[in-house]
Image (tube, rainbow, N blue to C red; front, side):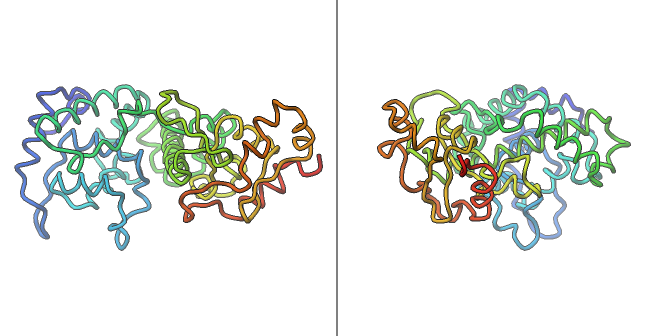
Amino acid sequence: MSLTLDDYLRIDGAAALEQWRAILCREPPRPGRRQERFAPLEVILCFGLFRVFDPRRFGGRNIHLLPEPARRLAATFRRSPGSLTSKMLNLSFDRVHGGRNEPELFLRLSNEPALFIGLYEVILKAARDLELDEAEVPDFVGLRSGAPLLGQDELQDLELGIVVREAAHDPKIAKLRGMLTQRDTERLAIQKARLGQHRFAIQVLSAYGQRCGFCGFSPEGLGAGGLLIASHIKPWAACDEPDERLDPKNGVAACPTHDRAFDGGLLTVNGGYNIHRARELEIRLADEVVDSFFGPKRVHERLAVCDLELAPDPKYLEYHKAKVFRSGA
C-alpha cells in the first residue's frame, strides 16, 4: 500500500510505537537482501539528520566517517549507513528519482519547523518507552536546548538574496523545475542554506568549547539564547565558494559584544592567533567602562581555541585583517 503525506505528518504515539516495534523485528542487513521500505518515522528522523551533516559529503569510500548519530540510527533501523544518506538525498531533491511524497515532506517540514519538532518529540518518546536508549536512538536534534537552528542571524536579506540568485543558476535545481514551483525551489535553496549555517555554528561553538574565544565567557546554565555566536571570519556574503561559508575554520565563537567588535573591525586575530585592537579602540581604553569590556583584563592575548584541528585558517584571518580590521584608524 502506498503512503500518503498524512502518513508522515500525523504520526501519534500509538503509530510511533507500532512502527518502532516493526523496525525492531527486522533482520540485520546483508548483501543481496532487498531493503525494506522506510517507515514514516525513519523518514522523519532522516530529515532531522540534516541538522547534523550534509549527506553529499559521505558515500563510497568515506561512508565510515558518517557522524555517530547516523551510524547509531542505521544500526537500530537494521540498515546500512549508506541507505540513510540515500534517503536524505531523495528528501532534499539532490536525487530526482525519489518518491514524490518525500520531497513534499522536506518542503513541508522545512516551512513548519514546529511541526517537525512535534513529530520528533513523539518519535523519541516512543523510542524511550520501548527502552531504546541514547546509544540506540540518540537525541541528535537537542530537545533540551529547545532545538533551534543556530547561526541564523547571519542569514539576512543580503545573504538570502545571494542564495536565491545562485539557485537560479544551479543545474541540479534546474532539473526540478518541472516538479516544483519557482517559490518552492527558492524555499528549498534557502532551507539548505539555513541547515548548512546550523551545522557550521555547531562545529564552531564546539571548537571553542562553548566559550567566547576573546574573553572566555560561557553561557552554560544561564538558559538564554544568543549569548554565544558562531561568526564568520571572512563574511558569509564575501565568500567566493559555498564551501568557505560552511568551513568551521572560517568561524570564531564570541559573546555578542566581542562578536560585534570583531565584525566591525575593532578586533582582529593574526596568523599566530594573537588578538589585536584597532587604534581607535586602544585610545578608548583610557575610559574605565571601555577597558572593562576590551582591556587586557577582559580580552585574552590569544584566541582561545579548544580544538586546534578547527582553528582559524590563516587565509581567512588575512582577509579579515586586510578587508575588515580598521588598521588605519
